[in-house]
Length: 99
Image 1 (cartoon, rainbow, N blue to C red):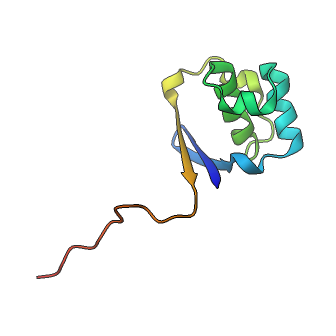
Image 2: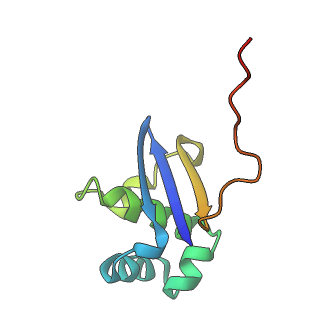
């Protein structure tokens, strides 16, 4: 099952599969949160949320620091977690009938 985190900041979107984070990314999350990796990525603490956003954003913006998000309003950042277990949606969108 994939756990895709989608992050949008200032209209720019990026995403990461949380199940495919690297050891370095996991250690970085542990370092800034003071929590073990699994606890940090399931926690709803602001530090944990900021750490996951930071690691996601850092993949496309290598120079970004954890503290770069300190002065951002929480509502400036849009996050969405999509769990994909490989099954199709229960109510797929069906095209309208012509006529």
